[in-house]
Length: 375
Image (cartoon, rainbow, N blue to C red):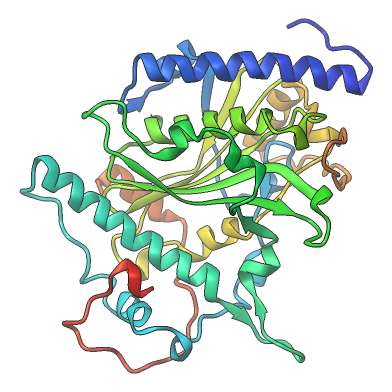
């Protein structure tokens, strides 16, 4: 790898050129030869590496490798969902979540795809309702989890939407790859009154009926990461930064999910890390609170993250494996434009799952099932 110039502005510009070429080449490769899943060997040919991370490990969270710091367990437990304030569809979903699961056994073709897609959609609706409608009681007024997190849904008028969505649109390039749905695309704004405090980081919540295993990436996961970085690079608001991390809350068939984070390193290699795969088949066994902690995460920013040396990363990974706590860098607040269901899957349940808290409510009739429009 050629050494970067000492000047931060020149350093940033050099990296942007490198990342633009790398992500353009990656998107072209994905379009020309799409695969349902990508193994480590497949990814290596695309200049992508896939590692793993434990989303609850404190050494990882304190390291520069962690790009999105989750809300603490103690903080997330302060929020709850008052069922008495929820529409009937939400109450039905929460009370009948397990019954709404449709086993894929015996289904084939488009019916199988629809079944898998439906199962993951109900998981998304359940998780998203807790994120959007959970509150913490305070002396003055209830505090919303969604508002506290500072992640805002990208809406009409946002420059990001002026750029072609490409693979973020969820359109499959082949019949062998099930479609996917980007149900939420968030950006983080430190001060809601000041657009200059929007970070380049992105969080995507996607679901699909496709199935994968640990050690592989789904086409939609890799494609959405690449497309989000490509589009961020094209935004004028971020033309003076080379830092474009992406967090994906990925839900897939059949009712499983994981957390995926990614960014380019200084060699132009896309470094992707994925958590274990967790089961959401049964409500009481699913890690709702863990995923909510990352829904409400805080993006890591600043030169320590943007210009992180590959050699430092390797050393920190070794320290993490050995259980050595890395030094936590001083946090640098950014300003825009500145340099600142299988047995294999069941093993993931070793992480103690927690169901979100909610107020007690009379259960609805069992024959009433919610639709997406009711939530």
